[in-house]
Image (cartoon, rainbow, N blue to C red; front, top):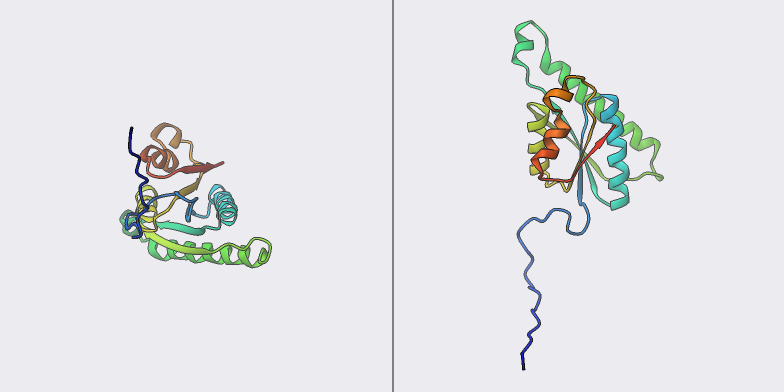
Length: 161
């Protein structure tokens, strides 16, 4: 005769972070102002709304020392892009208020897009990452940010065309 014991659930909350155990809590989307990134933002917004998740909109501000050498005000330009993206997101949120309510935050990270998105996803504890498909022909050979994120294998990644 065997004796069976039911394991009692722990009464102490787990301190370990688990991605996506009860559905996504944070959906991260990378935006850069391109058409594909804005489509990705719309898709991610719908996903966040349906899952009752936070939409973390991330712009990775490039750091280009070479541009500064030629007299290009890179920091000013990329800062303006970030401000413009926030304005577009707020405008879209206002247009759809009551129909498409979703909690969202805007974050700016610095560096190259891949490294910035990885850092953002880790820091924000993203359960899912959404990006637009690359519009640059050379990425078919070298690999796009989306492909590199998929290969990292740390989050489910959705690539929006």
